Length: 293
Image (tube, rainbow, N blue to C red; front, side):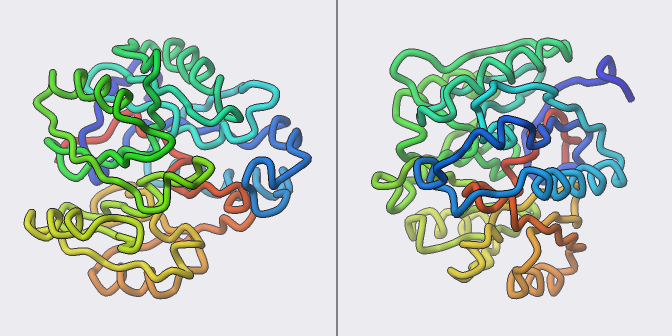
C-alpha cells in the first residue's frame, strides 16, 4: 500500500490498524540539557530511544501496518516523537490540536505539513484560547470519545473539537483527570485509560472519577485496574494493533497477566529510555486509518 491508498478514518481504538504515523527520536532529542525543566526523569540516550522506537515500528510492520514517518521536526521540539498528542484523524481528514506547554508549541505545524503531504485534508485547527492535546482523547466506541480535561485540554479546546465530532454524531464524555491542575502538562487521559477490546479497558482508577468507571461498566465494559507501580511504568498506555493483539510496555507483569488471562495476545516492548520523557507507548503512534469493527 502507498500513501495514495490512505483514506483517513478512525472511530475506534480496537479496529485493525492499517496506517499510522510515527516520528523516530532525532537530533532534537539531544537539545534537552535540563530534564527537570521538561519534567523528565533524567536524560534519555537518543540512540537507545531510537532503538526502542525501531522495535515498535518493526512490530507494527510485521502485523501489516503501513507506517508513515514524520521525517523532520523543529530543532528544539524534543517531545515530537509523541505524534499522537498533536492531532487526530477522523473520517476523511485531520483535526490539529493546539499544544499548551511551551516546550511543545510548534509540533502542530510539522504534523500539519506532513499529513497534507500525504493528501489528508485538515478539517479544523484548534485556535485562539483553545487548548487541546490529542493525548487526552481516547475512543470508547465508534460513537463515543472520552476527552480528559486538564491543563493540556481546556473547555474551549473541547468545545471546538465537539463542533467537528458532532458532524459525525460522535458524543464526548469529559473526564477530569485528578491532580492534573497541578501537573506540568504531562498527564494525558491516554496515560491512565486505554481501551484494549470492545468490552475491556485498562484504568488507573486513582486518576479518574468513580463516575467515569461506572459509565464504562454501564456500557458493559470490564475494567482492569492497573496498580500504581505499573501505571508509573506507563502500563495503561497501550496500542491495539488488531482485535485481540495489544502492545504493552515491558516490565508490567500484573497487567500483562491480566490481559493474557482474557485471551489477549500481548507484545511487550522495552520503553525504558523513552519513558524517561514522561510519555507512553500510545503517544508514539498516531492512527491514520483503522478498520471499522
